[in-house]
Length: 291
Image (cartoon, rainbow, N blue to C red; front, side, top):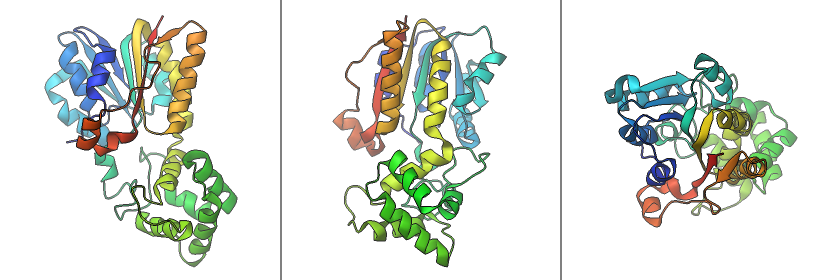
């Protein structure tokens, strides 16, 4: 079963209490939601949002014992305003964003998130999105690909890798994760180490396919507006681009007097958690309280 990252820290900072109304913007497989629901009953309600219909189904199964105390909504969190129109009187005691993706998604043989599994080069968080990673890889120019790899992956060999991809696709379209990973390995010339040569490119493609940074930029002010005075917002990010966006958003809103940042130093997982759950290694948690 998927293990939520920084679960104890989330509970400590959000401090869910019986009767609280909570918004989990990335319910995923339901790990954080389960821990929160156990503390907000009786009379508490958790709204669980996810753009991945398969994640919603997994969460529904995991959280079935909570009945009507959890409401599931399939939507990208960039469209929170549409959700709030359906529940105009609700303000939330706490709001959570977990910006990572679950092991269920990573190891799915059809989603194509991991270069370690031979799968179609898809990478869509929602299968309703129109374009896959394969679409980008096989249609973008070398300049466009290099820009994606640098902007969203901070890949220093972005131009060399993009050129190699263009050469390879002239022979045959690139359709699978393993094909692309091997092309990146050859282009980079790097040996396998703790970090696979394809890591940054795969991150960049996933961000581009799902417009992850654009969605987060739209969602943050909408979520803050829906938070009660005294309510708390917690955000777990997994790479520097997301964390920088969250940090800057909190800084601006604190200067405006809207929030108080609760952790000046970013919270990271303990060594024990990283050993138990290696995907936690890059997690960073920031929390703010609305004034």
